[in-house]
Length: 374
Ligand SMILES: [Cu+2]
Image (cartoon, rainbow, N blue to C red):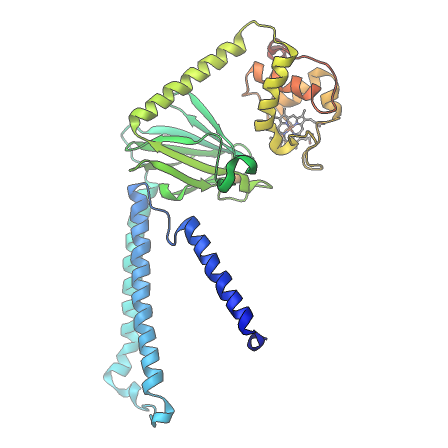
């Protein structure tokens, strides 16, 4: 088969091959991304050292093979040495060469061991910035425990992300530079894994467990990673985007987030009676970000895994049952409890669902109704 390749198809293969290599380079470069933490740099350095040693050995072995093939070929009248194994070198080379190789291997391994210890040993006896990272199907939750801030991070759909499809999120994981950060990893449903190459580590997020890792970012930048544990249909829709900024700018960001939180809480707790329109519009926005991953923007769901809410008996039935499933979820299914949403948010989502698409219940659910149902 291979011999039948025409000159044309060969040229075509070559051109597509080169084009592919070039796009791949434009996108990713040929090496790992530049590290953003000292330990990540050390990992990178070991990788480079290993590659250099491997290239060096490759050159020696190949030169030796090519030399032997060329100069010792039969047409030159070369006949094989029948007594090589009886010479001093013939006897000992079988011991020395593996010993040398093992020596090189162990040198790399001991370096790697030292660095790995640094990666996994969270510094003790000093205050670290605590960030709890919770994996959800299919989004990330970042809790800045020291500041009482919660950030929800979701992938941005294709129409809005352009070239960064599956690499972009709505809310980034903001982190200060030159600050030791402790990450506490856990999951709300199935196994996920936090992985941003520039930060050095990759860590599983396991439901029911909290594990810790740490990092200290040594430069500003935007670093992209993703969930690295197959976690269901939309595993690919869990990108991670870290943005590192100087500590002062980080504090500004914290203040901004706290102000947003206070304003939202005040709005949710006000005694105001909301109009149907206000609730519907708020609800649509919330539904499209938090619920549409499974139930779809169209409300048609993805049966049988995710039921349609359009025409659903629960959504069109008694309000109490509808409230119940949204607040408490349905244990054993992907429908989680949404009790962490505030009364206003739940009221808005429920009002939206009961009046969106072909659902025409006309019901308006107020925050006070949600408060009673909790
Ligand atoms: Cu995941």
